[in-house]
Amino acid sequence: MRIIHMSDLHLPADGELLWGEDCRRKFLTAVGQIKEMQDIHAIIVSGDISNDGNIDSYIYADQVFAELNIPTYWCAGNHDNLSVLSTTFKPKFCRLDGQIKIGNWRLYLINSVIIDTDDPSRNCSSGMVTAKIRKELNEQLSKNPEPTIIVLHHPPLEIGGWQDNKILKERETFREMLCQHENVRLVLSGHVHDFSLKKDKNVIYSTASSIGYAFCAKGPKFEVIHGQEGFSSISLGEKDVIIENILLNLKV
Image (cartoon, rainbow, N blue to C red; front, side, top):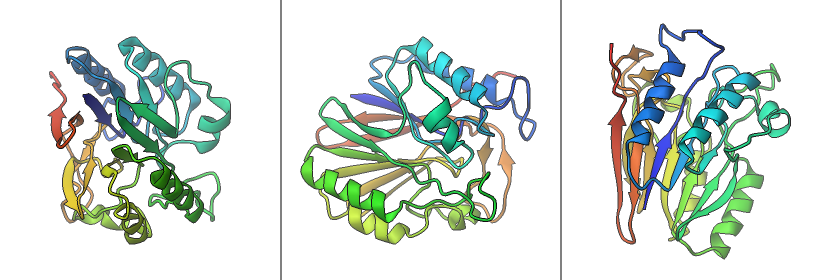
């Protein structure tokens, strides 16, 4: 079984460039490459679908994903608008946070976005899985023994570099809870705009390359780099999980 993991689309208003990058063009490039792939069972998007939380960007993404006709599931990122996603936006094709079954695998898409208390109109760059969500997830993991994937926007494991202070807060507590469940096999995140693949106590942690624009996340400072945008292809076997970073085929 194979799934696609993509993240950080950062879809803007029509024609708007971000850091000089055409994020809509790159999104369509990714979709075009996925169309050429065989036997994709699901697409998982780990947040930052929109760059500014505009409802039009969600409607656009929903329409484009519908053209693929592959079940697609989203969770929110720090650039997304939680209110719009939970109330105003009514997706016709994609599904938002929740618990899903794909084959014999169970996936939990959970929220790690926290609102800035100093400015409630904004989200914090770093994230956190609340005690309430951790408790609910812990109970579900105990009840459901299937091999499991956890999806959230903020990485719960350091990748090294300048963004490690912008990822998940209280991440040691979260990872400790996950490692108590042998059924947890894989954790997928975004946010850092760079591909990474690590293992901690028998759990695989992977971040997807950004669709919109890529960072040199493992470097000492903020830097947008070209040619590293992409997504992950994940093959799920009974014993093995194989993750491949696929770069976008961007023609000048």
